[in-house]
Image 1 (cartoon, rainbow, N blue to C red):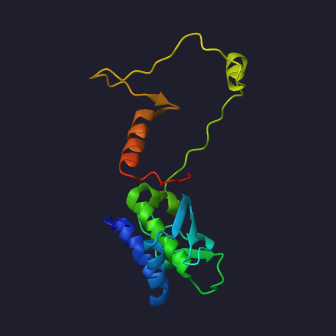
Image 2: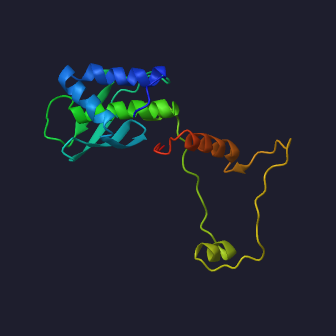
Image 3: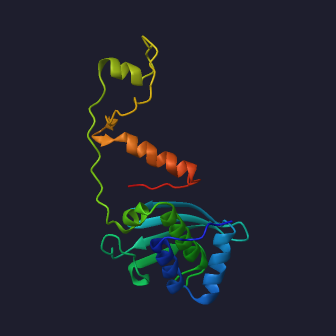
Length: 193
């Protein structure tokens, strides 16, 4: 059973699906979505990719492109989106595209930051430049290593505010966010920056 959409952002995206589709296609899209016909939903800046299976078991690839990004935190309107699907329905917005948009709304419900990623309003940092490993590091990456001692990772002592810094980011917050998502049953969430 699908969880209800509670956030304003996710409900607004679901309303965009209603605006895009005629009543017949929207009813079919809701049935597809409720029957778990929407598979993976991958979201990256400006585009959402989804796999949607119809009642016959045929899987179609859907892309929902944000053609004119709204301001940060705003919901794209029906005129801001362009949908494409590999199905034979050559109408404006097929039931698969509408079901995929409901899947995007569900992903936004799971993690509100996805809206900014999808609309392209979240700045993405350039990938850091890493130097090629040399010496012991190169040997380690090629599988030629023997640990000198057993390493253990302990918990932080109570009251120790020292962050776990990885590439100038407090990784402790990232781990805590991941743990909350997994505990909430949201392991399906995948976003590509």
